[in-house]
Amino acid sequence: MSVSTRALQSFLVDSFKLLAQAYEILTATEKAWADGVAVDPEEIRKFFHRVHTLKGTSTMIPGGDFIVSALTTLEDQVFSRPFAEVAADWSWIPFAKKRLELSKRALIALKERMVTTPTPMVPQDYGIVAKVVLSDESFLVWFPNSSLTRVISPEEIQGQEKLCLSGEWVPVLGRSSSPETFRIPFGLGVRFEGRQLVLAVQEFVQLTGWREASQVGAREGISFLMHYANRNQKQPSEAA
Image (tube, rainbow, N blue to C red; front, side, top):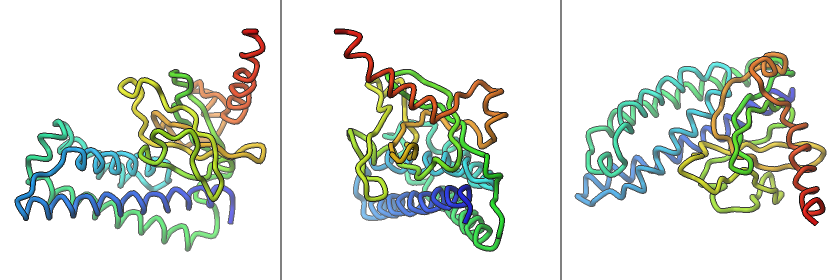
């Protein structure tokens, strides 16, 4: 299996996980309404974040445009209101079910395509262009598929200095001290120089090769992380 195919397969695994979590929250919400129990707006927020992260994940998958479209429609029609208002109204639930079902079918089709396609779905030199957060600043960077391991939900990385990734505890970089300014749709697992880390992603931009990424002003991600780490290591001695 090629490097790019392994990376895309990892994204699909996390997409199915996010979809299952969204279904679980939606089912519980529907049951609460049927039982006459008030719905906690926090549960609506959790549902929204699953949907939003799944949409972000799907933008990284060639052929995921249908999922992005289905979930964008769901966000636009349901979550243009405060979570408290959504929690007090049940009429959106059937529509949300249909959007999730469409997304599920599309994910299954993509998974079957990966199994039956002997060649990589994208060239091996392709990677992700994303806005990442470090020290309360946004940077546009590009990571090759070979360096990517997982997409991580914001709930998994929230409040953690380290995160267990593939059986290994790794650093989490980019959890902003200003959450209202930098909302993190997902984290990105990155492997370089035999190490791993999780990097907070503010926005997915595109899936492309390095030449195209450099033309839109993206920095090469691995070099950027190495420079950032070296700069931070020098700061204490420089201050002394």
